Structure formats: structure tokens, C-alpha cells
Length: 381
Ligand SMILES: Cc1ncc(COP(=O)(O)O)c(C=O)c1O
Image (cartoon, rainbow, N blue to C red):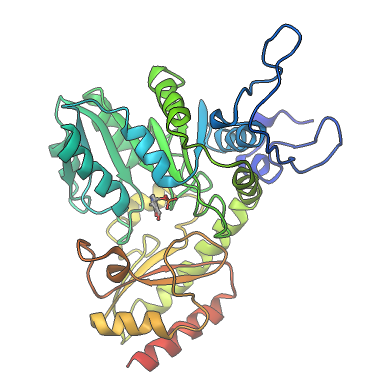
């Protein structure tokens, strides 16, 4: 058998780390549903598992595959992206300073605001569209810098290497939300991130049939041990069946991401100068302000996420209602294409323009997707 670390991460993912069950020879991992694990004659754990709230065999398989494709010192899988976010942020102390993006996944922003109001954590939100804003927001007191790239829903691109330099300059840790750019295109830890976060609900699982959250770490140190303990104490671990689905999803990650990226680029080009659309926001287009950095740090494709600005809020809402192939639902990264009138989904506190349509491109025939958008725009008028 080839040594795993000599193989490309695409091969390691496809084979779930050359999985062959030692007893049955099965090439897919089994699902271990046990909530508890017997000890041996010496009263020592037989394997590494003791109790399911700490993760059993299937959860640890998902973590091993993820750590391998992320080239990480370790990985943890949670019951949802938000469960992972909340667990890491639970390590903050009163007075700690956090720097995060002004526009990124709204659930993480809401939780940071809650910690600010209730726990005395200080938070500075920076405008990621301004090159100098991150540097200005970081202070000697900063403990954590949280960036999302490309970020919801304008797909702004943060230069991970530069962000890591700035964070490390004051001894802070950098978390990169890589939900939209998994390891098949961006190796955030190699670029200097301390933690890579992903909503595993999206590209990692890829089939819109589970919720999961993940952290991969560059350091197996005390802070990582604290996050691991907190996951157990909060009961935030993923369930075994979902962990099994996640492993299955990761096996096709590279293929799905490549196809979604190809189709999204074609769709972005098609609608870039379209009479019914004011702008297309996609990091794969040279017109996007983040294109140069994206071209450097997304070498496996620009991903399947893009947004379009319609001519009016009504038109955006109508287009989202009138599609027949795109499904009008929130989320992203699945095999089926989704369309959202994002402001309506995020609610009244949203800072997203009311003309913005967010599209998650799946793996369908791209010409069907283009024709569907054309007919919806025609009908919306
Ligand atoms: C970029 C990003 N981060 C985090 C999350 C939260 O993940 P989950 O929905 O799995 O809790 C999402 C979900 O939409 C997301 O898109």
C-alpha cells in the first residue's frame, strides 16, 4: 500500500484513507452507533473510545479523513457549523479582543455580538472590502482573528497569508472559515491559519442531507485540548450516522467542487453583462476585486457560489420565485443548485443589498441552469 502522505489529498479523500475493514474487508467504513465502549481485562479502554459524547469510531474516521485532506495536526467534527463556532468562542475570556469581518456568515456575527453584550468580550468588525481595515482593527490585545473567504454573500476574498502575518504579529490566532473554499482549492493551514473552520453541512457533505461543523488545527496544543473538552461537555459532537454520511461526502469532494466551479464560472460569464442584471459577484471573474488573491489561493477552482444584483428588490424576489430548476432554498455546496433572495432569508438586521440573489451551483447540466435563470428573469420582467 502506498504511504498515505505521499499521495495527493484527492486520492486520500476518494479512498477515505485507503479504507479496508480489517475484519470484513469492506471498502466503506461501518457505522458504529454505540454510545459506550467496554474496557479490557486490565480495565483500560480497548481502543481510543470511551463514551459517544466524546466521539466513537465513525466520528473519529470522519476526523481522520478531514485532518488528512486539510494536512492538519488534528480535526474535530461537530453537530453543525454553529455548534463548532459556539464551542471555539466559548474559550474566550472576559476582556479578550476579537477581530471579525463586518460581512460574513450572520450566525457567527450574531454570536460574537451576544458574547460582547453578555460576556464582556470585545469585538471589532472590519470591512473586508478595504485592504487596510484588518491591520487597523488588530491591537496588541487581540486574541482571535476570524475571517471567511470567499465571504457570504459578496464573495470578498481575504488574503490568508497576509491575515496570518498580521494576527501572529500580536500573538493572536487566525481562524479561517473555509466553508466555501475547502482544502480541494485552498489549503488555509499551509497559508498560515491556526484553525480552519467549515460548515460541513455544505461542500464537505455535498448532498444537503446532514448538518455538521468542523475545525482542523495547525497545533495540537492546550487550546485545542480545551476545544476538544468543551465539545464533549457541551454535547456538540456529530451523530455517528451523520459522520458516516460526511465521510461518504468527502470522498467525492474534489470531483463535485471541480464541476461546480466550472459551471459557476460559465454562469458568471454569461450573466456578467446581461441586460436584466446590474452586477455579478464571483471571484473567478477578473472584474471581481478579490480576483488576483483568489487566483493565488484557490488553485482548485473558484467554487460554486456567486451572487447577482438584480435591477430591483422585487425583481430579485421574483427571479428567486420563478426558477424551475434552481431550488428556492437557503444553504450551499450541495449537488443541487439553490437560489436565494438573501435579504429575505437573513431578515431585517441583514446588511445585504435587497437586490442580491445568492446562487449555489450544483452539478447539474450547466446549460439547463443558464436556461432556467433566463426564463425566470424573462418572467420577472
Ligand atoms: C460560511 C458559513 N459559515 C458557517 C455556517 C453555519 O453552519 P451550519 O449551518 O452548519 O450551522 C454557514 C451556514 O450557512 C455558512 O455558510
